[in-house]
Image (tube, rainbow, N blue to C red; front, side):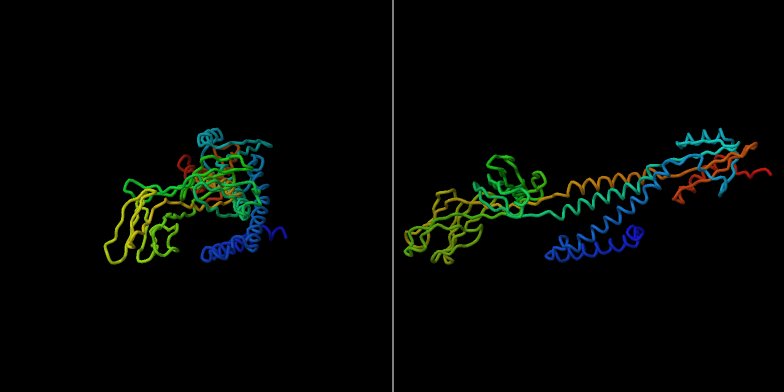
Length: 386
């Protein structure tokens, strides 16, 4: 059973299944597959598979890291080189090998090794993947909700987040503004707000922008969207129902009798325009209190001001720091792979002869070839004298 749980075949199946669900979740986001129990069980199963495999490999790693000259076999695919023990030992140390030597019954054995970081790299990578999976499983508990309000309003945290934060948190919208660049094109939208807990400010003057969320503990606050309402008041119309205050969306027409009223935000300045669709449209940049006459005698429209609504999205991120830690460890493991490849040299000097039998061991055939070529460039190959 343990062999099956840690098997490569099971790992390939689980990875394939997770990949398929991830692709489907990307194509059909409404299905919310990442929060399904099927996906969670697959991730949990892969975690168990990888963890079991890692644990099984650790004893072998421990033995490999603590190998000594006593474990050098006397028989094997050795190659004889015309060098004595002292010369070869000096060369090994110059090549930065860690050298272990033992002498038993007149027989000398030498074990030289280097690149132990490379030997550990696969195991470090396994551990980094386990950390990433833990973070991913934690992230499955993430939730999000929206807060909508105009400047000056205070709103409670959305219901989706109250289970974690409680009912005592709220957000006060202090300001919402559109930021323009040097060419007077929209650069960003910014909301400034306070966060309260039990009526006490716990985050004062915080700001969130599009693509630059504000981080509060294990939560991110995004600038999700926004809206404007231009407030105008119509007076003097014969139709009493038309004499009222209106909230007009930006650049959206409002029909009053024979006239159409439009208010538009032009690079931060409000432009009020009146048109009866017969005569040329009349308009001007306005401040609160400015008035334009309508077609109907004695009727007018007064600009009262603009109210901005900001929509903030609050998202928990329970597993995000854990996932980042896992990716950082994975980068370290990759550097260990690139910077260090493990190899061993088994050396047995032939008694009474200027010959050392040498065997190179490494999981990389390229490394073995590099070491053997370096040995051949330094010493001639020589067979033992019978």
